[in-house]
Length: 270
Image (spheres, helix red, strand yellow):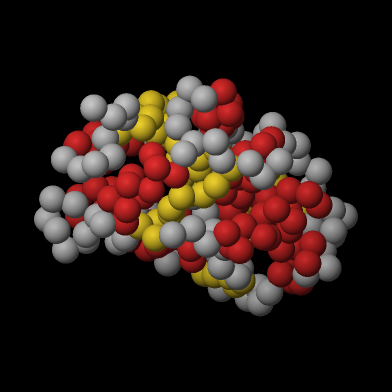
């Protein structure tokens, strides 16, 4: 009997447990048995991967960048969600603000999410810089809620939106998933409009160290990619995890974050 692969994931919300119990059950009937371990934050999870406590980490894009940096590239991405290949950052303002682009944020206040959130803090600063706006041009209101979870909870993004509603900021930078959640749940119906949308970039991926044999990972990846949206037993798991299908990693989608981390001097252990 083969040794199960141990997958690490961060418990950023209560439904992480049923998601991974469902995934474990799915793999129990195939050639790649697995189990999972939950962590309170991505720093601990990346450390566990580097130490060999887990075999594979379900990493955010920042955790992937950190792993690449700390291993000097001796790691590999195995798979990601279809939704991870088309992630975007949305710059939003109150409806009727008449903001028409990033350059119009000069002299205004922008609310950002947690400092370790790629979509709501790190990449927004990168996009501002590429629009010609430096540290003295935009007043940044940083809202560091749930640091350690890389923005997964969305709490800091909702706090940034509230700052706009309370007129403590003129605009906010949020991830596309938060924007879509507002539309679905009507949390703040009609209150905001998007005035700039980033290019797409990659978000989460399953990360393994290069030393983990492909003979162990390949069957697991094959079975993962076989999860089927049209299968009623698979769909609840896919819905909870926010995807329709698992896909091979798109590594070029991390280029902007690697650039942002370098430009902002973010250390490998963040």
